[in-house]
Amino acid sequence: MPGTGAPPPAAEGAPDERPSLGDLIGSVTEDLSLLVRQEVELAKAELTESAKRAGTGGGLLAGSGVAGHFVLMFLSFALWWGLPLGRAWSAVVVAVIWAVIAAVLAVRGRGELRRVKGAPRTAETMKKIPNALKGDEEANHE
Image (cartoon, rainbow, N blue to C red):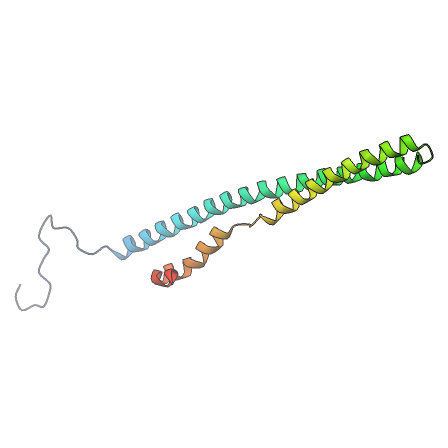
């Protein structure tokens, strides 16, 4: 109706151009839920990898501890058998072999533990979420 100030009636079958507030909130909620699920999956993957490395390093250090125990045991045997020269030197040789094994295991175990980094990618992407929620995703690329 002309002159009433009301918008013209929508033509039948014409699609609504703008989504409703409920549709927008539903879309944001769905996107945020997807983002949180993806972050949880990323954290799980990174922590699984870190746990494997920590387990390997811990196992190698445990082996180093066992080998170190054998070093002490064989050095004790060498001292105990110290008077008969043949037996003492053979025990020292065995103790030196165990000392080399313990040193190699300790160095490898420390190296593995130093390579454990936790979840760096998850931490990095979690820092980007506040900017994304504000609609300022360009700040994440600076």
